[in-house]
Length: 636
Ligand SMILES: [Zn+2]
Image (cartoon, rainbow, N blue to C red; front, side, top):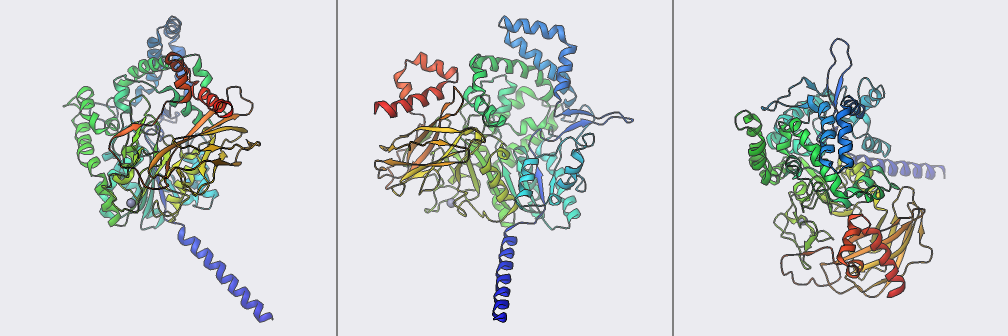
């Protein structure tokens, strides 16, 4: 008996250690270098003879206020001006205050720094997360630990050790060709310091363009095990052009959502904007950006992150062809050699043993205006290479993709919203899209942060087909959205006859909500909201529906979840989940695009002037939500 028990014990130990072994194999122990985004690293001027360092970036608020106080008469005048409607002058004065502080960040026409500006050293013994955790608390030594939430998350969940994470520091004013060489030095230093043959890279935003440039030149050195690029502007963005030309036209609803998403759940900022309208902000920003143009016009980065179709215009209007020929030389290479070769670079990397994954965000305007679909700063096509309908449009029903990068008939690379076609992407099998997620906000979102951690620290997600919990397309679960919804038996974003209910989850951090109605646009089904539809944070509700899912495939439908936030008078709101019906034969695709935003019930009922006023006052969502709920309860 004893022998039997000991055999059993041995077997148990063996099985469990095999289990540990299996888990360890999935965890990637390669050192990871984080490559931050534009203007994420600190920049400063070192104090001489024991004087304090002068921090230039991130700017310190007190300093800007000091300047405004120094300049008080001017500022007061502009306040009077503001009261009399001269918003532009107010913006200029604000910009002037910031200008006096930022002035030391100016560059010469050749792109070099005017002042002796430095960033933190790239020394692995110093810039590993374990050491940074220690010294950041002593504020005089170092101001910040970038990606602290992500690092804490990775350590708390057993993905990584602090000693194995390194932060690359750089001067944000310089272009990717310059910075790729600095990154190369740091990669070599980290390899030497850790004794590892390779390193992995995790990049955010501009860090992805620096990294792609590094790979373009140095992939043959085979130093990189894998690179995970989060929201990289691989084909640039319209943002600099609009700012330089003072052509700011903020989408107000997006701005309200963005501020709420950053400030966290439960914040109600819409009311702040209700008193003003968007024009006030636009004029102020346009006025302020004029003063700042002098600071940033010779930053080579600005031209690197400009979309290629706007680059020549920017070059012509803001750079001197002779004095700035160094900036122009590198940026011509970026726009005419490196950016067009992105797909080939990634494919060659894969053959050389470097795996690349991309996380792109979608469904949001580009800040400052325009019709590109993006993540407020980077267009989705730029981050992914995918074909993307302009904002407010989608591919017509039946569209199954151009299939230029992936022609596997078993693969569906078109988003459930039918706005993104990843079959043309740089990496159709290795690009994950998050709908309605803001640029570089992944640390605030449970789904986005776990996706990033899985990609960076494990080998579990070989591609978008590896795990149904991490499909190619998923909705953001940033708490400010309030609810997340999916049908009970389909992949996220899809619906078919297999489904019998919609599962809605309260994703607020704190607020209790009451689901008031669910409306399907494009399907004749009725949702039967259970009487007890109050949900605490984290709680889910299964909402059955009656009626048949149409026998069609590749056809868009929109599910709108209306709810009220407890305790807030203006708490009625709606979240839309664009979905695809996957329940039969696809209709013939006749080409072209259709509008995503069908006329809402309320819009049909109200005169244009009143509806437009609601939009202007950012009351559209709340009003439509209340209207939908009333309509569902009483009229139909
Ligand atoms: Zn494919």
